[in-house]
Amino acid sequence: MVQVRLRDHGQAPRLPAFGGTEPATQEPCVKTFLSSVMAGCAAIPDRHTATDSFIHGMGELSEIMHEVAVRHGRSGLAPGADGITGEVVDLAICLLDVIRLRSPGITDADINEEWFAQVQPSWSFFGWVLEDRKARTKDHDPDMIATALDRQVETIAETMAELLARDVLRSPACEEPKLCDDVNRLALVATEAAIALAALADPGLTEEALIAVAERKCAKWRRSVEEKNRSSCPTCRGSGRRALNWEEDEPCPDCTVAPAA
Image (cartoon, rainbow, N blue to C red; front, side):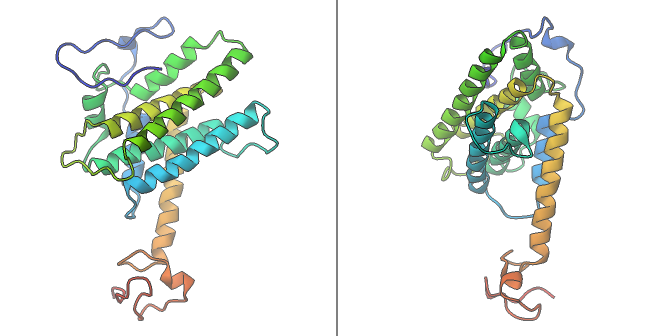
């Protein structure tokens, strides 16, 4: 697995070549998977926390495990509509959202500058991970791919477990927008491993396809939150109005604060 490297003293190492092509030939990216996810998460109009996103991500990890088991014929259940790639994108959204919420004001440019020291600003790190993994496994037979899928899932699960060990559920937010701590590092490592898993599962996968899935999922998330907000108290965002037939001019049963006029 490609290791996420912090910007360090001295010259940052170059990325290794993939598919016989040096990273320097990569075309500049206007929109990347990272920038699309960061923008999509920032547009969610609710008060969810980094803890909320991580817990949801644990659920997405179980969905990934299910999809891989189905692919291997180890499950009697039908595959989900999203497949491995869709579940990978769900997990990546959760993990990148953890970083965004723990580091108020952080942008995709900040993440590239602080974490991906070997990647030029115009490149896409996760796009490179996608192409690198596909290039390194293009000649693998189905049994080798199956083994690699299992190992990749193990890597993701181990990294998520390490995040729990680092107290991700209670770790404080950083006062600075550029946070270089172990929780954010591990969240990026897990995201990288998830994108590599998607590349193993679908050798034809492109970053443009990943971006399209991410934008669709973030838009669906935003619509769901907006619908909840329309049927909730504007003060506490509780669901009292819907659940208890709450009238507009009555105090909210969830926070006992009268709704705004």
